Image 1 (cartoon, rainbow, N blue to C red):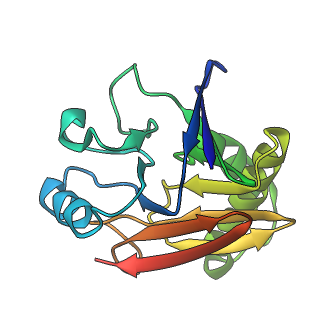
Image 2: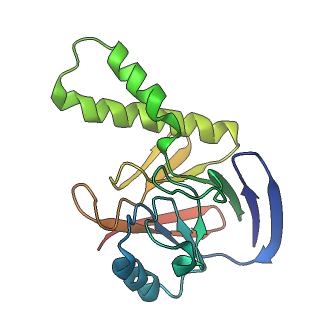
Length: 193
């Protein structure tokens, strides 16, 4: 069973009880590509839940079936910065991923002798650590985030970090994710568009 806790940046919380959950469709960084977004939503009609991690780029009513968090290119004030979902034995923290941009950049600039080849890897490593720590503060064991346009699925100190990528501006390819939760078992598929 699922109980959903919706938590905004200002810590407002609403609970819903009694929905069985299996399959979650996760999108991010659609940046106005409504056609591809609709194709993915149509292809995965069987998803029990749809989450969009921000940077939508078109009218939100077009994806009214999705739970949406605000991205750095979303110019609406009514979207929450974060949402937390309790699904069976797992707590999912959903956010765009840009909350730590300034801190990450400052940490990288403070380091000496970093080659350009190491720069992106270092930025990602710092971001992943910040996301992991933020999740632990919120008592979450899964983080769904976007912003980097780079698909990833990795566990860090007991926290599973999942980035579905971007459906139109992905690096190295465009993509999205399917997350299946069955009690404490989590299966993640990173898919290409």
